[in-house]
Amino acid sequence: MKPVLLIDFGSTYTKITAVDVEGETILGTASSYTTIETDINDGLHNALSRLERDCGKLDFAETYACSSAAGGLRMVTSGLVPELTSEAARLASLGAGAKVIQVYSFQLTEDDLEEIQRIKPDIFLLVGGTDGGNTECILHNAQMLATISPAFPIVIAGNRTAARQCARILEGCTVHVCDNVMPKFGVLNIEPTQKQIREIFLHRIIQAKGLSSAARLLDDIMMPTPSAVLQAMTLLAQGCEGESGIGDLIAVAVGGATTDVYSIADGMPRQMNTVYKGLPEPYAKRTVEGDIGMRYSIHGIVEAAGIQSVAQLSGLSAARAQELVDYLGTHTDVVPGDDPELEALDYALASLAIETAVSRHAGTMEETYTMMGQTFVQSGKNLTEVRQVIVTGGSLIHTKRTAAIAAHALFDPTHPASLRPKQAAIRVDRSYIIAAMGLLSSHYPQTALRILKKELDNNGYPEQTYSR
Image (cartoon, rainbow, N blue to C red; front, top):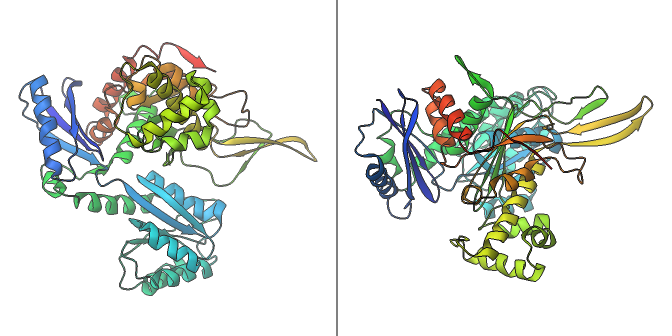
């Protein structure tokens, strides 16, 4: 037996997973409150004590960790054209594990600067122009940022002709220069920027109270938790040498404050008479819906879906549903338990959270007519042929209606423009192992993949295909 410890320092809970990499099995899992207010190591030690009670004393050969314990990385980006460089900046940020809270296009204004100072982002991504193209916008924005002497680091990833000049304008600030995120029209090059953002992310979370000492226990550098999840899902879809994957998939993690969606699929048009609008999206894509969550962002679900939809799905009156929503919004630690009203409400909220988040993540199709006849215009990713949906989160794990909730990720005939999966098998991460397997995959990809396939298959759903 060769035990390996995998740690996820979450903003609320520290989750640990013990794996026997020789036996390719999960030895045990445990979690504890992260305790970032005192010492983050307290949460880790508490989780380890719980694991030891369940599994006995384990002598770990290796230890790896991911984290979002500092609350994640709050990103602000600016670019030239909304549909091009601004969108490229957004995709780079999300793929690196960041939470994009504002995107600016064209030249920054004084009002924009005041808003940026109020936001106090953790990092600013400055882009604009293809290589050899427009330099005026990115230079203007660098000059504007210089006037506020920003305390946050700035990543410059725009027109290479202007990048070094921007760095000189921002002399005295923390600046990182990367390759252009869109060197040619319609061509993305986001990996160098994502790598830099991850490095800044890790530096920041390691500075969180007590995490520096915890980091010394590790055998390798940490990665952001969203990056670990994206890595695990990519491995599960594609496979690795010696082990096949399960094919294209989407994954949805419904949390108390946000809902994350991942898609591993090329998403390009399937029909000959379809044209693609905008930038091609990455094969491995992540989006974060910061306004959609089961407790802290509960009102965002209602604003997006409407209280009548909540009432219809829950079977409650609109007035009673709103009353309970308001209550849960201020009592974020409440779980349904045996309360039938709260259970019904959480079912409705989780269903609508998934439906809203996946609808925003997936592309759309519009019908139009040209001189050549009927034509379709696709924006975003076409996920209609994706046949696997993976879900996780307390609202899906602690319920008997998991499949019914997860089915809201699928295509709805009443919204025919949305390119969500038409039918899919449902897989559930009941033990919260996805991030852990993403960590493990950096060193033991075959083992991580086999454990993922085995654990996600043990939920009773994959043999049945769901549709709406």
